[in-house]
View (cartoon, rainbow, N blue to C red):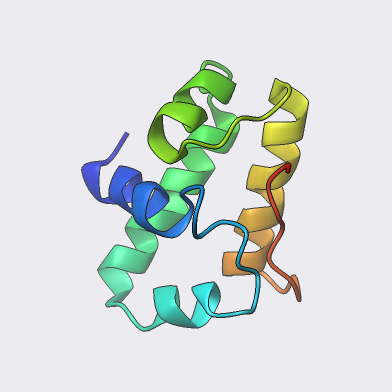
Length: 95
């Protein structure tokens, strides 16, 4: 996993920030240079495709616990869609 991507998860999707879905995350990410945005896009693509990246790895980076692999995948796909496609709202992790 890329160090910059891991840092993005720690800073913007940690247990304090991930529950703030007021709409700042996408504009914040897009304000960075294109190469950083590409690193984040590739990082999401990598962990979504990596069957070995599971709930324990995500919790280690963000301190957010997911009940199972499927719920984590749904969240990651939703986050990718919010950040890089046309999803209107940012998904929330489990309570």
